[in-house]
Length: 401
Image (cartoon, rainbow, N blue to C red):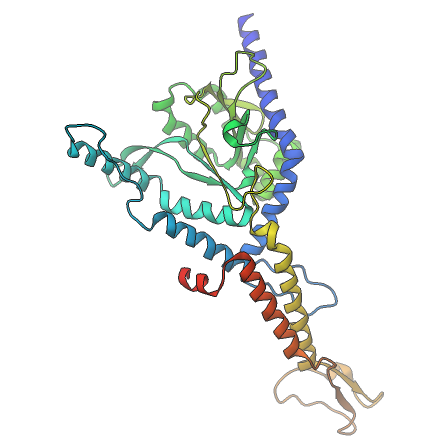
């Protein structure tokens, strides 16, 4: 009977966490995901869709350059002085040997967690998406040829569509709950669970973990929201059953009704609880750092995508018009006398020979666009305005390139 009660309680916890996550995913996250996808297309210079009536589909690099310049400038300000932190004795006698030992330990931990790389990566997310979340979980990392194990606090940046939270909160620290979703391989999850084992004890539930990782889920019966997230994350259709989604939930559980204790719950593929324990941080501050690019009227910040994607697409359209006009003016259209020229003989090639009755059997129709210089001047003005608006002007881009 006790076993049944425990199983029922486990189902209640699973259902509460998944319901909260999917409620956020169905409404708020759909809007966030569209922003993230649009920002990724602009940053990675993915060509826009080509219109049937156009010859070209160019993508300017202004958005990419602005995001890189701004994030690199902030990173340089954060790390210009190394170390960017310091330790000072608070009492006497001053034991500088101990202070130096602690400093070296912190430096080793920062290096082992790839702090510099992750910080710059997170700043790029923040500039493009408007916000970034750094997850700071405990891990044990192997370093050096001897495989020395170093305990570190991970500093892992996550794009905003990987995070769900209580929408009624005014800050992450005040939210009733926050959850992250990561797409990982079986090996990555086992490594994560193994690195946490010594510190967290039995927090990872071995039986549930083994079951969740050993069973390959039928992709045709997969939760549609989970499947959609995997596809958005770049997982190919035939690889869906080889990846796993790990949701880590931090917050209170209403179903336990225990006075508001904070818990950590790990769930794989929204079906199996693989981690469960009371959070070590019961003081309200969770293992997350939340940063926003421009704060205004909501918890999530505004980034380059929401503020300037439209302006950048207008630039792309202007360049497309100029490119099409130039191409048409260069190659244009031709007229020919009926019966005196076979269109199938026409080809664009050096020294091509075209059979025709008379030399005037074919003639070039001149292009109608005679104001390309004016169009180029307008585009240059639009580029200048965009750089001023993003604050990634020529000087900043030169300094950070």
